[in-house]
View 1 (cartoon, rainbow over the protein chains, first blue to last red):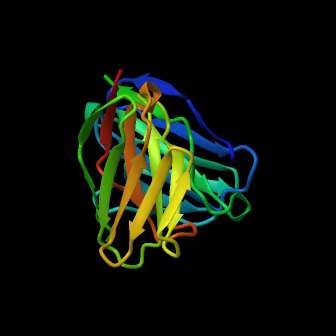
View 2 (view 1 turned 90 degrees about the vertical axis):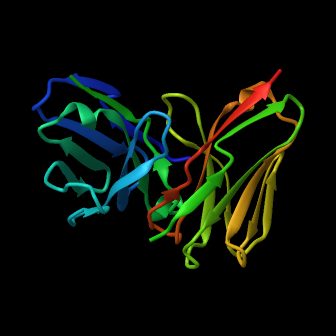
Length: 116
Length: 112
């Protein structure tokens, strides 16, 4: 299957700082990327959908000014958590899909964010 | 929007027995139903999926059935092994590049 990477795999930051997470499709062009958040012992909750070259579509209840998503190329999307607080501590997972990959969603390995 | 319910939330079965996990969905336009296995701290792994033009699909010890009329689909694992222990999620989408809506998950424990 197609390969999706995420960086960093984990990050610890102080409250009030911003954190950027990268999601890359390594061997296919991802026309669409999705960002999920998963709290401990809970399901994956979609935060936003981003299509290359256009603004992300955020799910209800997700603050677009707090979670900035950029999908500037067909292989890279970034999620920036601005002014992070302890309640933002979570497992952030991206997925990517594209025509060449059969439109199946391929998941990145996730980023564990801990805000102190 | 789509709502996916999943049962049970936890399931313990004796090694070698079968496990069944059930999901229901609400959006009649959904036509793609994948199942994922997730181990602690890892990404979800696609184990099997089914599209709405078929009623059943099997891959070795894993099978999925779909009842589009009743809007429910199930995962069946036969001859369970300890390595099957994990959290399993069902999901539904309208296919293509559409978003996935996940069920709440089932923690499956295989008792040796």
